[in-house]
Length: 192
Image (cartoon, rainbow, N blue to C red; front, side, top):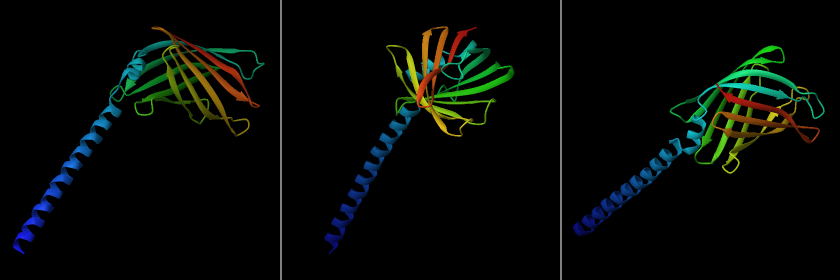
């Protein structure tokens, strides 16, 4: 009986040590995965390249047949939270009124997607879009939904954000009206 008890005790100890080793390996793998997820990479460096002040020229079309309206503003871009997110603040004039806006852009290392959130003082909603980067064209294609104040419904939009050169960025936005997509906005940003 004493030998059986000793054998069972040794077996239990081995199982406990083996289980602790498995947990340690699992914990190490989890820590490594979280570190990779949390560490800024090449896409974050690309966002950081935009740090600074930019002149912004905006052209809007209310619908596919409308005359364009133009506006100018200034944006200030910076990286926040240890270089993990880009925050852009806009100030200027929009259709005769003072305008301010904030855009936050994240690149998710796990999903390999960008997420953009946009708020401004011309509404009370938030535009949210996700997108992927095409290195051949240096363009992020965003897609999302936004509220339409006229109908109360949600409408789809698409944006093409292109890195033209080190000091120039271009955003072209397309809204959907009556089931058809049309160019609704073009923004040209030049570094000051």
